[in-house]
Image (cartoon, rainbow, N blue to C red; front, side, top):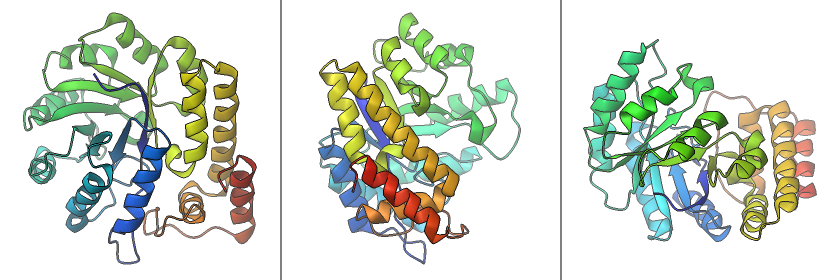
Length: 292
């Protein structure tokens, strides 16, 4: 089972040609580890897994392995829209011993039946000996991984857990304890305070990457039993996130990361910049919560 605590889906810093900026990537990962992260996820939603060039995929993995240096868990996203394309990514990942787990969403290009969803996870889990974690992200994939599916898939030994924003499902998976080495990871940041009261002690989000000091406050408060302190810090994080959403989440995310000293573009290459007034709102929000 994964170590309890927070897992950060890090942003992917790219230059104008779509190449990963190694030093920026490594600095971001190191800062998250210093903030107390239990693990790092590459190529998640905020890491633009579907936007990174094929030629850069391995370079990001190599940079992360060097930056982590065995200190925390390294998870790598490999979501794709066919078994063949998944195999291509697994062929790359299987070259590296420093990867602790693979994270997979359902395919997001075509509609799928429940039987096809099960078949996809069964077939892709069989392609690797690495630990395998499902990622239920219905707003992106428009497909729901149900509790019943998880129970069936948990019979596959290397499927080690699921990340989901469905607090009811995550709580039920914890209560039912499908396997000693199966980890339910909560990802609905708006409900992190409620999740902690539920006993959900594994949580993951991409927003942590641009608020390392705040997520450190949250984890330290949890560790000391200071629920009110954690709740206040979560409110700070969510309020800042809402300002970023209002500004335009992707370019606002890049602006926030740049303010924190991480060079590069952290948004899809077709995104347009935001107005200076909205940038100022983001900056003030980060200053208010102590990130700058």
